[in-house]
Amino acid sequence: MSELGYWIAMSRVQGVGTGRLRQLKVHFGSLERAWKASLDELRRSGLDDPLSLELCDARKELSPESELEILHKYGVSGFMPNDPRYPRLLAETADSPPVLYVRGHLPEMDALSLAIVGTRRPTAYGRHVAGKLIDELVAAGSITVSGLARGIDTCVHRETLHQGGITVAVLAGGLDSIYPAENLELARKILETGALVSEHPPRTKLRREHFLRRNRIMSGITRGTVVVEAGERSGALATARNAVDQNREVFAVPGSVLSPESAGTNGLIQRGEAKLIMSADDVLTEFGLSARSDTVVSLPAVQTDSVQSLLLGCIGSSPVHADELARELSLPSRDVIAALALLELQGIICNMGNMHYVITGRRLPEVA
Image (cartoon, rainbow, N blue to C red; front, side, top):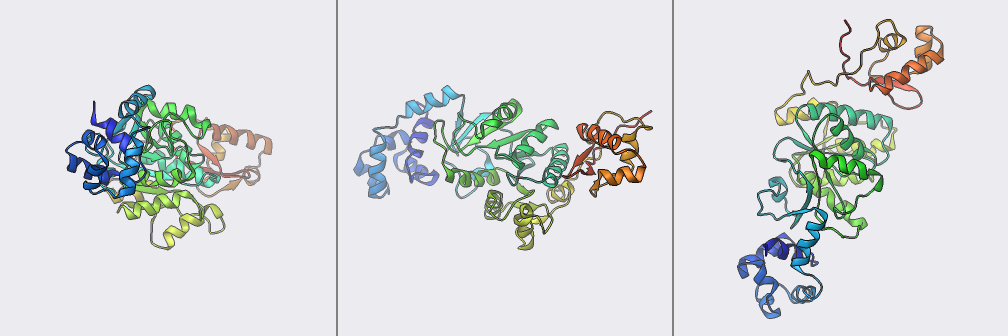
């Protein structure tokens, strides 16, 4: 039987991590022999009495063969740290998972890969900035990683897929269950080109502490972490702290000093824990790259004599209210609102909230 079965079974014992497993393999020559060892033999391997006893008791309930059967049932692969498919960047971290469970196609993470995280309750500003960053980062060839949570995480995965990029979702529980359930269809789309990963085997009951633990995987598997919008207690800040500990690049998008959802990101910048970024180029230059100028999404052309075209001449990167646009153009409010809605549907402008609009930065094709 594959050593993976023994590796999984033993890693499910509390207190047995990657270091312990390597220690046991060196001592016994194989994890199969370690799994079948007597209590005295386990003690002589260097395990203390409580852990030796716990490992012996675990053999009454755990079966290496059954662990492999469960993986097969749910279409999950298990990578050990000595497996060439185990991400090198993650393996180099101090607290790497003893087994990385994967569904889908895990890309080469040594290439440009970025964890992009943020609040579960993003403002219109946060969603807009995240979308713009992702468009440019994906165009530059970046793989994105996030946690499939509500808010910024969902925005990251969806926008990456929309741009034809590859994204990886790190789950807090087993890969047989998607949380939140509303992202089940999104998870399926991710699997078409990317992957779902977890440190927990299928059938693992989701626990609150799992969410914080999985943050170290998001930062550890990537070359840098970008925090888009986060409050003072956001889990995204834990991902940033993990990235600092793992000697990875950390970036943060500044926000209004009046916005609670930007308090965490502003704090990262203020304390020198993250580099302030205002565009994807600020991230890419740290890796010796630059945003491509010809990768803006093409959108349906707008008639030059339409209300939409007039509006585009008045909307920039600073939010402007619909009523102000109507006054400036001397147009009925209903016509302006209708035209704004059409532009927003095309992704050309973004409603930042309360009818304030900004241009998205996506270039329109020239009209003949």
